[in-house]
Every structure is written in structure tokens, then in C-alpha cells.
Image 1 (cartoon, rainbow, N blue to C red):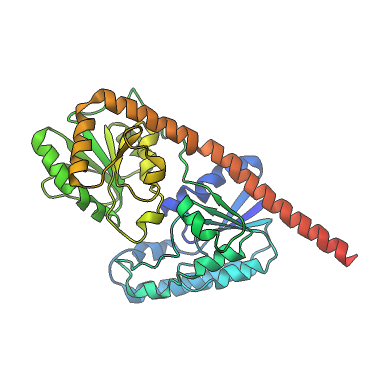
Image 2: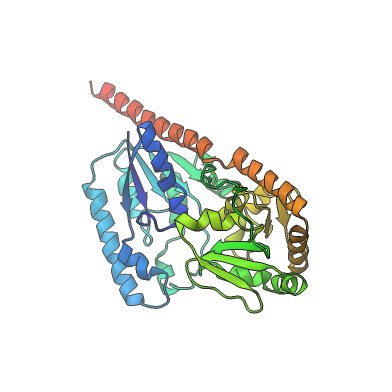
Length: 371
């Protein structure tokens, strides 16, 4: 079976894309499902897109990528199934997706971010006018199968699409796993991983971390793509790398997922939460979005609503090794039960096989009608 994956970014760039179709494709190939990517953004575009300024260069590169994607779609042979992740182009209306729909091939649409909620990019304010946030609702409507990352987005998608399934982010539990043989360092580490884009969320826990550091030795480990500091906090910055990420998280005692209020927050699935939980770390997180679905407060982690709760929960976990172990085991069990990649691959195999069967039925009906 041949699947065209129409995606907004080149491979190995976007975390969401990497943990959705790129991850699935590696395993689907073993089941006879070949995925070919039709990416919108080039490395040249992603190299400048999320930097401040350079609007002229960004605009030129966006136009070049749009024309290239349009040419790819117009020249492509028909696959068995089309898979669209987020959008076919980072700018403009759903023109390319409508052209794809005219192929008469089943379309599976996957959305892991609330792109229908308008937002202003901190690095691309003016270019945001080209986003066409309303096109997502049109993509829901034109697709044969819609996959969404959580129940919040599913509720919105069902207003436009008849077939909607919740497919949360998944973890490769063979790679992300507790490792008793990896020594946890002293003083204890509180871990956060992310990018400069979501670094402002750390402001939420700066004061609790400073208070905690004054009371007992502790280190705040930041695993990210660029150096970060937090005034008054002992930050241990380590540059993110695929090969080292799991080991670096395993060495820590607690994972944190702080989130400032935003229009996207209630719709979001926070992958960091299940990453930490998969390696057996108890998590302290802001009670918003998917955290409310995943974390059972006091069982597999804590939900912290204000600075005092953040301080109290972090202090409690650092002081009580038995509590960390019990919560960490419950966190791992949650991931194995609900967010395992193995179970998800079985589901995605069925999605593509059913979509291909739908196309075969349509072609058969057309052949009968012509005879």
C-alpha cells in the first residue's frame, strides 16, 4: 500500500510531526504500508522561520516552498491513501488540500495542535495574517477520516467531520523506560525539556524554584536547543540530542510541565508529560489541557495551581524517595496502558487498511457503473 504523507515540514525537524507520522511510518513499513513524504517547508525556510525579523527573506522562501509543493501535488501519481498532517502549506487557504481531494483518494487528516484557534507568532507577527486559521474546519469536512490528539479537539472536529478518532501522542516504551542502572545524581535534579519558544513558561516556577533552592540543595536541569537561564535558580543547561535525551531524563527525580495561561492551553496535548512519566518520573504540572486527562492528582503525579502548590509539591517529592518511587511506578503504568506506541501502530494499521479498502470499493462501484 502506498501512502502520501503531505506534511508542513521536512523530516526530523518538527517534534509533533516526528512523534506522529514519522514515528508511525517506521513501523508501518514492516506491515506493508509505504509512506512517501510531500513536505512543504525546506531546510532553508525552517532555518530562518522562527527567528526574529527577516520578513522579506521569509516571505520569499514561503512563496518558493508553496510553488514547489503545488508542483509536487500536480505531478504526483495517485497513491492508495493520502495522509495530511496539520496542513499542506504553512500559509494560505486549503487550495492544495482541495486539489488532493479531487484525486478521488481517501484522505486521512491528523491534527495534534489547535490550529483553528488564532494566535500571534512572537517571531512572525505580520506573516500570521497569511495563516488562514479557518481552513482547518474545511479540512475536517473534506477528510474521510479525522485523527486528533485529545478529546478537546475531538469535540470541535465533530462539528464538521462525521468520523473522528482520538489518537493521543504515543511513546516508544522500549526506548523511554525506567533505568535502575542509571545513577540518579545528587543533589536531586528537577527536569524540564523544551525550546526557546516555550521557555517563557518557566517564569511560572521561577519563584518556587528559588524558594526551594534556599531550603535544600537541588538543581534545575534544562534540556533544550539553546542555553537558558533563570535568575536565582541553579540551572544546569544541557543541549538536547536524540541519543542522550532519555539518559539525561532518567538521571532526574522529578519532571515539571509549567504552563502560562494561553488561548491554546485548554486544547493542547503536552507530550513532555508522558515523556517524563514513561521513564518513571513523577510529574508536577499545570492543570490544563491534556494534563487534566493524564495526571491523577496524588497518584501518578501532582497538579499545581499556584506558586505555593508548586513549591509544596516539589518539596514533597524531593524529600520523600518512597513517594517518588510509588508515583513513578504509577506514571509508567499509565503510559503503558494508554500511550504505548505498540498499541497505536495496530490502530494506525487499521486506519490505513480501512481507507484503502474504501478506495477499492469506490473503484469497484465505478467499474460496475461503467459496464
